[in-house]
Length: 329
Image (cartoon, rainbow, N blue to C red; front, side):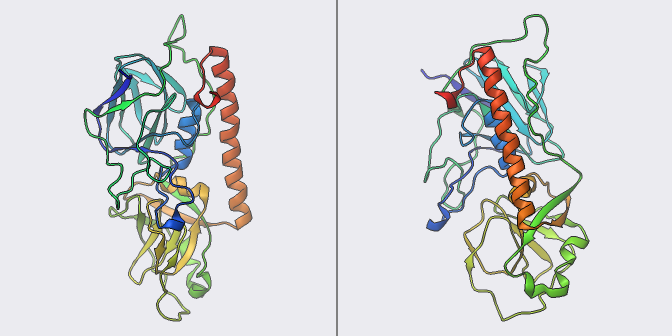
């Protein structure tokens, strides 16, 4: 029988990856982890390919038990992580022995936590991704008692004389502030808002409880269009589009968004800020900050460069401990 990871407390947990890249042309939402940076880092800390399946834990407590010794990494929003009652750090590889209970509790400041396992686990795929699609009914949330088949186990190891962790890999941990700063570039309809466009940056917006992975609803100052040629026809819209409906809310489309929409797009959230937006909780406030395309690209390259440097450190550490990394098979 294959070794498994058994879910004891599911909370709100789904199997995710980085989404259906290139499938929007077929009408499929890209989907995938809401916080792409944290998901990438979790897999890299386990030596996995960054696109490997992992768990996205949203808001509620989670617990699981492996049937064999494994190595895991927990990233994302600050939370309390424990293995058989002993506290363990986030953003570092963690050994978990067979039969031990791994718990993630008290998620705070952000909304989502990511759990990767060395070698990952088996998952169903749709159009090249295991990411859930709520419209098609693919990839439902896990339930208590669910079993995930592990692709790899990891011999137990520990510091021989104390509980000092073996790893200090300095993963790039993003901030989790009380008020979020979300970088945006100009949207295609920026000119239609004329003198009202700067209001996007003048005051904070509050995240509505009606927000989800499809899009965030934001309450704040109204941003009326000054120049209009009638209703906007439905057209392709990017992930991160900041739409301005006629009412008193903004819509920020996230990774579960449909590929077309018919509201004017004032701005577009940058790739790095989109991960931060995936951690914003209902009731929290955000402030938008204008960035040029050059600044957005520079920030994205810096973040990816930090993940690439981490991957090199992980490989060095795994080689020293004779841990066979899956992406080196």
